[in-house]
Image (cartoon, rainbow, N blue to C red; front, side, top):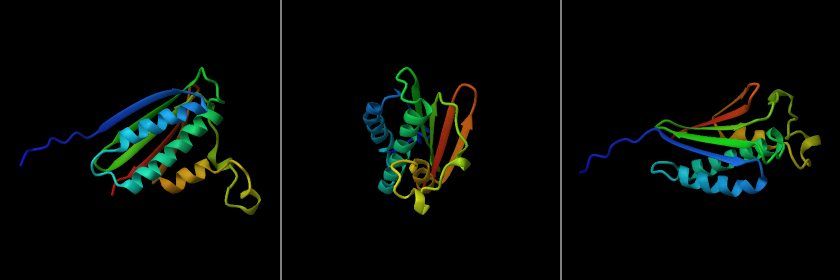
Length: 143
């Protein structure tokens, strides 16, 4: 039996301009990055949806669809976790001030569910803001 060297951690990075059309490039990048042996299909689906929501928020709310600003996506895969950071040039926000999308008065709203979806799909969600950027870090622990 051949001795296979452990290649962890796997690191993947992508930068896209802040256009909704770039989401297809992000999707293709995610599919290639997350198709590693040992990653469960349901994990991939959850992670891809969370990343799509995070990048969409970074484009629309963080960078305000300013094509001159980039969104940076980094994926780190180790034996124990999949860690994703999504960075934009926005000023950030206080997630505690967001409306609860599950309340009756918010059910029919067309937006406001992205962060709720991310929190329900991922094991850990963190925010960091500086004068230069805002970063969402999401983590899924591997089974």
